[in-house]
Amino acid sequence: MGWWKNTFSKAYLMTGPQMTDSPVVSERDAARKSRVAGFNGASWLRGNRFGEQDEPQLDVTALSPVRRGASLVFEPPKLSSPKVENFIAEQEFEGVVLSVDEIQRTFWARLADCTAENPDEEAEFAFSEIPVDDWQLITPGALFYWNVGREWRNRQMRRVSDIRFRRFFQFSEATVTRAKHRAETLADLIAKANAYPSGDTAGFRRT
Amino acid sequence: MAEEFAIVLIGDFNPKIYQPSWFANQRLVRQSEADAAEVELIHSDFTSFSTECFVLQVARERFSMTVRSSAFKQQLHDLVVGTFNLLLHTPLTQMGINATTRLQFRNDTDWHAFGHFLVPKSQWAPILHRPGTRAVTVEGVRDDKWPGHVAVIAEPLRGAINEALIRVNDHYDESGEKKKGQDSSYFLEVLSQCYDASLSRARVIVDGLVEKYLQQGVFDDGTADD
Image 1 (cartoon, helix red, strand yellow):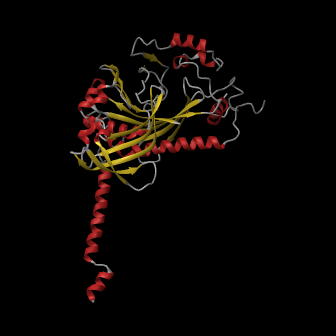
Image 2: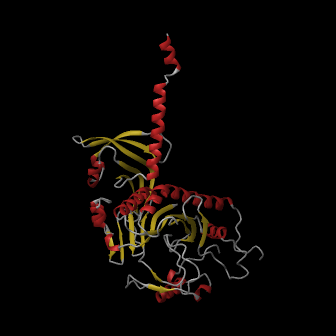
């Protein structure tokens, strides 16, 4: 078989000698062994002692780190799921607010299509499309993401249009340095162009 | 294919700080989102809560924030960068940018074939009765300037039929030039510069693996000599 049948718990896998059992384990056996060795749910903090450490822990920043070596291992409770269990974006735009009309409660934004190489578009949005908590963020220059797609909540799928303003945005030092360098290059080019007019203009002046 | 993204930081944390109300007060999340957060535990040793789109778990030595869709991956980046810009003196020593892809196979045969694709069984069949792949971790060196490694972990999805996970752990270590565990500035810079590249690398790895699997017609299940 390509994979071992996946009917026994992590706790069972850690028990050692049973690892040599047949990979096909009945659900009843697995449940029994899991009860014996598993986490009873009464305590949030639990220590497991592993064998002697013979190499450094390498996978500590993996989402489910592989623990190696001797140490008391903190085993956190199982990750709960965010309310949006899954979101499949069919269209993703990155937008920047261009202008805001406080009276009409609308704003114009330039949209860059993140899913295809389409030219930028401009669109008008009503404040009512944005969660009230984000209204204070609607100012010229503000960045936001607009995702159109399907989301799953409580195992139910629905079509949504989700606009989220970026609450914390900071360019890295390297990006700022690159932008400055590019701006300086462009400024030099413009200055040179002004100092040496094009041939057509020069010809016009001579006549 | 479904996706999950997480940023994991190793360092020295004070879990009690990381509460939904703190994130709302710092304007990192919407107030309504913080109000609706489901708090599992807030303790001086461990914090765990989930909001509409992310799950946060913080222990004294480990911070982990997870989102369940590519639609929220930029928010994940902004939240982590925003958090540690405010808590700049948090000593960090390692960082992982993790992308998990969930593969669903048409049937049991394809699912097993993927296991054989990852670990051919002819070497195992003579020494192990009905060998099966439990999990595979393959690690490579980084091809950029940052210290660390890239690990790919493939495993069957627990509790699901004919599904498997491919996790890509883009691991960043501290630079040797920097004093160890000083603050979070080094990893914030790495995150700002490498986040998109890390996620793109993960995409390329998973796509490449799946493509190679789809191209392969015959799989070594260890029964060739029978």
